[in-house]
Length: 117
Figure 1 (cartoon, helix red, strand yellow):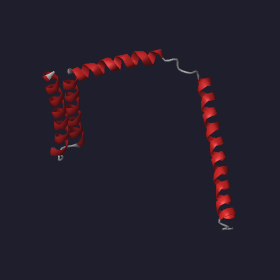
Figure 2 (tube, one colour):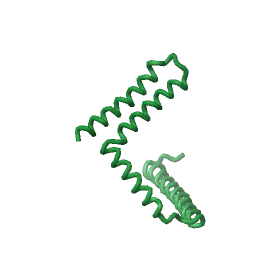
Figure 3 (cartoon, one colour):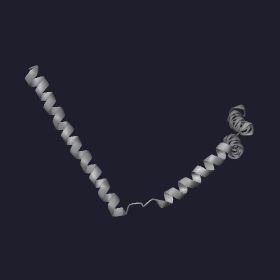
Figure 4 (tube, one colour):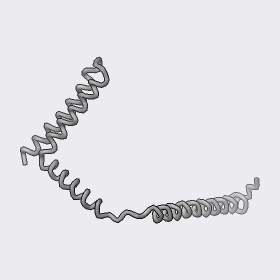
């Protein structure tokens, strides 16, 4: 338990070290500074990957991939039909809300308040 916390702290420190190196060596070429950040990120991931949290993340990722393979993805025709239905409903709701808005505008400004245009 304590070892895992130490690994996570080391991982965070390596990440911070990569970011600090990016700014400390601001007079170096951009590709070198970017490389320092990438090395810091890679070292942080490597240190964190061996902790319990890293192992849990790997397990979760594996299970997610297995579950994603089980998904029955819709066919192209079904996707296009569903998309068309959604767009049709959006247009229908837009027209409905426009009619409601204009009706309320007319009833409030022209009928109730008498502010004819």
